Image (cartoon, rainbow, N blue to C red; front, side, top):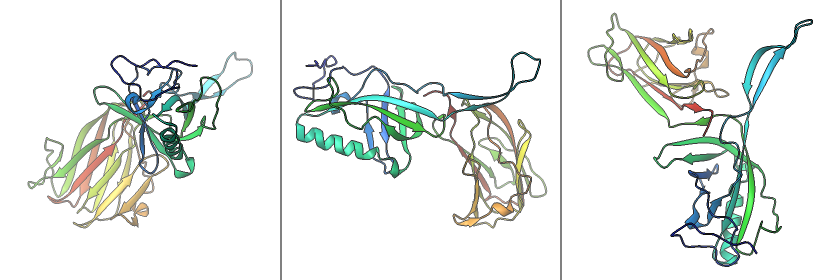
Length: 312
């Protein structure tokens, strides 16, 4: 029979026949399903233990697109793409009685149902910093009662999660740019002078991530037109229609989303210039220019994005 080795100073909640391995010294890791139900998978005192063998927290895999030429050794790399990642989590869970354990197991396995939609894995360090990644359960909880895999009060499962995006997300960044009472348009704390009702805001946005992050822009009117330019990449997009003082336009540049919605319901995509490129923020410093025409002291532009990282 496997022996349970508790951490120093802790009380074993598993009763008799508990899982065989002591908790790993790892940051806090949790699973939240699409309905908002959260399970802390590294919560020893409440009956959850991550086991050795965790995989998928660091670099994703990559696809390389290459061309070969006759008579030339090797090949030429034409492109690189990060693959969707898999995260493997061996987890032991247990309780003080068979009835309590079965209730715990059934409740937890219910949160793994991929038909509910994408859930979130979150890894939190001791200092409170965290990274998250959207995922759905693929396999590992089919049920096995082999030696060292299950008992009356406990079970060990090796859960495989598939993550459509290879990137872990950091804490959201929120910035605001506004037209003050003097007619200045200012990013965060310093004013940029304007003239003839044209708002010109030049700022540097530092993306701390490892990959391009795609922001969500929220524009509070009034304005008659706007051009948003990332001078670092040479890309821009333009809004060609007017906003009234009570209008709010949200331009979402995120990959596989990309929408422009006025006042929460109206499709505003036809009012983006046809040559618009919904650019992202490259890792590091980005020189950004915001040019809005027809503004007043109520005009505000908000920028929200999440840095994307290669590792948890």
